[in-house]
Length: 254
Image (cartoon, rainbow, N blue to C red; front, side):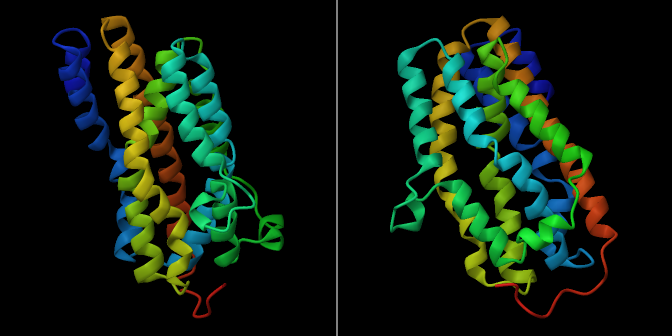
């Protein structure tokens, strides 16, 4: 992340934005061994790893809409706020929508969990690991930070920009290395398709605030902290996955 740190103190805002983009996309959280092993199918039991991931990830994803709302609320410019709220509206969706893409993303994620066997009975036997609880709580703090640039960095660069790259590994794991139906990957395919647009919106907004060195450092700080939290979560997921039994379930949970 050195290049963006350098441009936080010098150069144009365009140079800073591009440097931060490159640093974020090369952060270890976007190419973690856990993600690589999922995509390679080289974990002891991919089915179990995906169920464990789904259970834990829900603690983070369930607060995501609230985090988006917090970021929008802190931004001082009403036009910028409206742009972020458009993302929030898409995230919240419509429960009555016939088209699955228009449903609340939380419901689509619940469908994913149910499809692979993470139902209420499964969840009753599980306990959330400390890494995901810290990620959830600290990410919420970043998004509601008094310095709104921190929240913009955490959500825009630290989340929306990297999600398509991260989710591509999970899609491959589901479709190529698990016993689950390919339709189970829908939640992740949806976000690969739409989050490029979401990150573009955030980066356009962030660029308007990247005039000062102070703001640049706050934006970068939010992005780095969000990615570091995600990397600690991947560390925990890898440890858990490597301790799983060595055979995949041969029966789909769908």
